Structures are given as C-alpha cells and as structure tokens.
Image 1 (cartoon, one colour):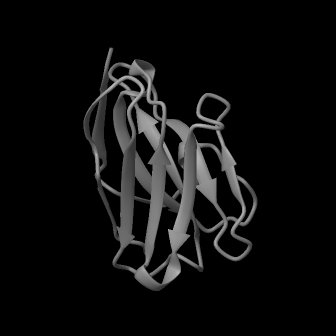
Image 2 (tube, one colour; image 1 turned 180 degrees about the horizontal axis):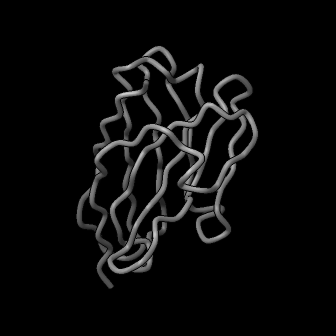
Image 3 (cartoon, one colour; image 1 turned 90 degrees about the horizontal axis):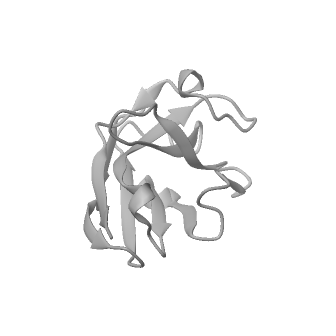
Length: 124
C-alpha cells in the first residue's frame, strides 16, 4: 500500500502560488493512480485533481481548472500540485491519495491510501 507524505503547504496572499509535493515511500505510484483532495474547516473533503500515471492524463475540479496543475515525477515517486492565482476559498488541508481504479474517481471512498495532509492558508 502507498505510504504518502505531503509537503509544501503554507500561508500565502490571495493571487499567490504554492507547489505541493507528495512522496510515496510505498512505491505504489505508477501502479495506482493518484489525486489531491482538500478539506476546509467545517466542510467535507473534496476532490481537487487526479492523474493517471500510465497515460499522464489529468483531471480537475471545476473550481481549480486553469489555476492548478498536477503532474508526477515517477523516478522520484512524487506527485506535485502547482497552484496559481490562489483564492481565500482554496484554504484547507490538502491531502494526497491513491486509488487502484483506472477510471476517474472523485469520491473519498474510492481511495485506499492517504497522507496526513498539508495546510494551505490563503489570506485576502
């Protein structure tokens, strides 16, 4: 099973950028697919972006499309999330997760391994 550790979160002003990283020491990247989710205080965890390692294709939530970008460095067992033009509503804990499914999956229950998350705070 994947063993995921996120990093790169922090405090940034609205309009700024951050780059998140997720390292898989269990080396499941490439066999499983990966995604980023986020959870704001008092809200449910929501899908942000996903990547299919074999094809390199990606998929995004409408709220982040055109501002966030997901990609992987398979040699380093790492998935990245580059976030541009951040908004206060992007604030939350960002989680990396893996799924054994090859189709696009958006539900928390479809992912079987999770990191502990990294906090992103966007000030207005």
